[in-house]
Amino acid sequence: QVSLVESGGGLVQAGGSLRLSCAASGRTSSSYAVGWFRQAPGKEREFVAAISRSGAGTSFADFVTGRFTISRDNAKNIVYLQMNNLKPEDTAVYYCAADISLSTLRARDGGGYWGQGTQVTVSS
Image 1 (cartoon, one colour):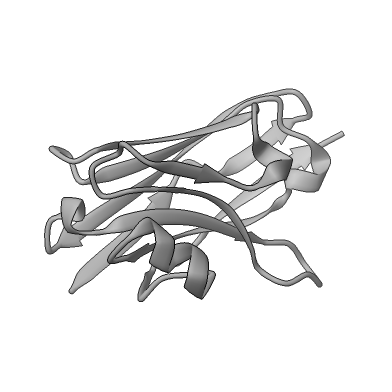
Image 2: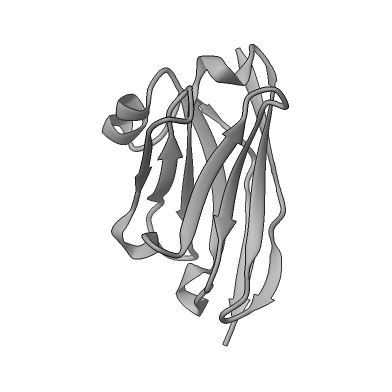
């Protein structure tokens, strides 16, 4: 069992940056791959990025490649999503999710565990 809490969202101008954090408690975070997903108003939830349990493997949606990076600090049980060159279309609630592997996250388009989400708003 693991609990996830996101933080770091906020309001930023287009071209700006934010770093989201996903803090895990309970079972050690290194037991799970972690992914970031987002949902904009009126739209379906979509995959953003994911990282393997060790951090050696990553996966990104095409629309964030080159702008976003994902990393993890297993000693602190935190996964980070660094978002640069933000665009208004990145506005959404961002959720982190955890599951047994990166491939499972992609296949399920989500995870067995979810955080409550953090709002990211990018103004033009």
